[in-house]
Amino acid sequence: MAPADSLGRAVDAAIRGEAWGWDALFDRYHGRVYAFAMARTGDRAAAEEVAQEVFVAAVSSIGGLRQRAPWAVEAWFLRIARFKLVDRARRAAREARPLDPPPPPADPGEAATTRLIAAEVRAAMESLTDDQREVLVRRFVFDESLEEVAARTRRSVGAVKAMQHRAMAALAKRLERRGVA
Image 1 (cartoon, helix red, strand yellow):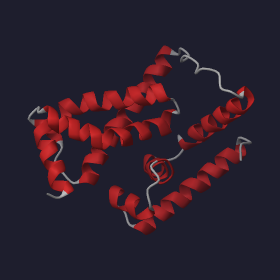
Image 2 (cartoon, rainbow, N blue to C red):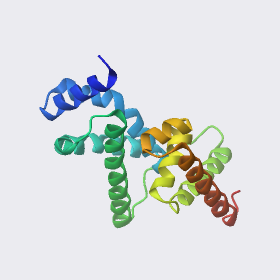
Image 3 (tube, rainbow, N blue to C red):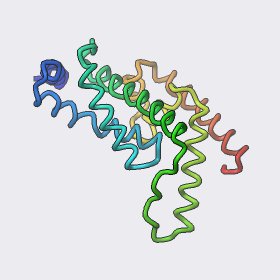
């Protein structure tokens, strides 16, 4: 049986509420959802929380999933993740309470510098469009080839290259203005 066929069967089983369907979807997509959230938050606990929220939300909305192609199911999960990340940011802004600090690293100076640079990059990425951020996350976090990104985002390879180039140029410009580059 082709992977797309088994994925379609898993989606159908999940719609019927069968545990094996959800297990299959979780096994296949949890890592991607977690990596997507991690790229946006930079915090393991937050990324895991977002990933959990995505799968909880998916239970009530899976009936609306129309396509069973692997790229479509992945895009559906990542779209839910995007909404959960926005919800999380809004909630954090309302609560305005600091998150628990991570345990101290072996070399506090180096770790602090790394965290500051990562925070600057994440902040700079927020100035990009959702499409540009998705391309960069897929290319540099998920380590997908141009062809894979093109297939998953339903764009041509040339369009992905152009979007990646524009996004990287915008990031470099913003980081240079902030004195990071």
